Image (tube, rainbow, N blue to C red; front, side, top):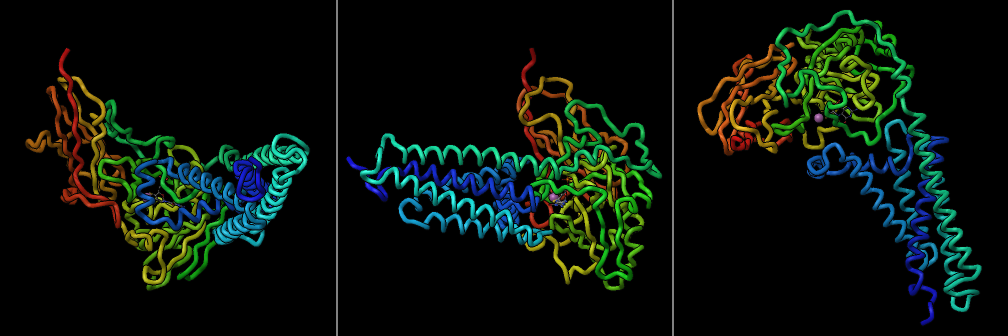
Amino acid sequence: MEHKTGSHGGRGWAALAGVVSGAVFVAVAEITAFAAARDASPLLAAGSFVIDIVPQWAKELAIDLFGANDKLFLLLTLGVGVLLAAAAAGLLERRRRLAGVAVFAVAGAAGLAAALTRTGATPLSALPSLAGTIAGCVFLTMSIAALRRWRAPGAAGDGASGPDRRRFLLLTAVGGVTAIVVGTGARIGTMATTSVASVRKALRLPEPLSRITVPAGAELDIPGLSPLFTPNADFYRVDTALTVPSLAPADWRLTVDGMVGEKVELSFDELLRMGLREYAVTLTCVSNQVGGDLVGTARWLGVPVREVLARAKPEQGADMVLSRSVDGFTASTPLDALTDPGRDAILAVAMNGEPLPPEHGFPVRMVVPGLYGYVSATKWLTRMTVTTFEKDQAYWTPRGYSAQAPIKLSSRIDTPRIDKEIPPGAARIAGVAWAQTVGIARVEVQIDGGAWQTATLSTPVSADTWVQWFLDWNATSGSHTLVVRATDRNGRMQEQERTPIAPNGSTGWQSTVVRVGTAG
Ligand SMILES: Nc1nc2c(c(=O)[nH]1)N[C@H]1C(S)=C(S)[C@@H](COP(=O)(O)O)O[C@H]1N2
Ligand SMILES: [Mo]
């Protein structure tokens, strides 16, 4: 049967031409971004836009399903979406001239809008989307025209061979390979040259004015128990940043403005000159489920926030500081939590003996004991605006989370694990418990609904750090249910009732089932 121009025949080739044109689109956008506007890749800008608009339940689902790979999942989804749209553009363009071009124009407009609305966008941010769209449309028009010529009835070498077929295949192959090489090269180039890894490595921080003392008995040596200080590589990471912002200390400025007597600007060196001190603080994410691992303890080097605020002289009536990251994320922290001399709210520059890792906020982040990360722990910090809760809202506030959120005291069983059978006999149940700014007074464990047994606690480093605990247990063969609960030094017991993480943190006692094998 003859091929007809139009919808019959060559559909696969048209889809392929669309995909290759899409690759040309992305590659030209990436190389333009590399040359002129590093932060304005339309694909990544669109991804960031999606992160900001997806509803809360979808975000939680993504974190539940993919954990730390939620961003990879987003990028893959976006990639598949782009692939399908590009294939559709090829098919449409084959059926009707400019129909595919219209698809690319819409995609380009979306990328443009996303790039121009990112924090820190400049007029140059329009270039990658514009260049990519033009290149993609030109390539699509050319390749579909070549496909038409090849597939036209009676054309030279219709179907099997001939110059028209060769021209189309050559165009597609060369375009595809070039796009992949150039696009990947440009992205790697952008990431390598904006990476602050080398600057960070060469950075030497001054000796701190004071160091914490870790008392004897602060760290229990029990297999399976979380270490007292969480190594940076294992420290949980939660943020809305699709790519880790890169901020060189030399370019870093902190602006303190808003309701202040004096607007303050600080360079990184000026901050260091205020004098670093060491603090041990347990950070907790509001998204941490009972028994979850979005909690960790580090030694931080930093400068008290109150000293920086004192320079700016907050005005009467102010009750909040809106801290802002270079990527636009904001957190609302009560002003009195930052000025309270009894609370070690700091601008941190180091974590566990090294400059902040890039993904933990290099070069400067906030750390406030006792407040969930989303209302206090702004990474890649660049601005602190003194204001009121009435006037300003932070990133998560309109997304279903409380404007203020103290950390709820909680406890966790680390070992034995639900998924690992243990042998019968002498066993040790162990875990961690935290009640930042107050301290843990008691941890109790209940086995199979029996009497509550008081666990032995490690010596706390401070009220702001978690403690480790353990209970010896003579494990008998079979399944056993373990429940843990903690009480803080104010005599408050961890809430038993289960509540979800939104709007201000989960509650409940962790209950876990342990399987104990038979002897022999
Ligand atoms: N810039 C920026 N800072 C941020 C966030 C963010 O999304 N962007 N997330 C906050 C949240 S929700 C938490 S729990 C902590 C986590 O800090 P970590 O990733 O260093 O563990 O960072 C906070 N700081
Ligand atoms: Mo968080």
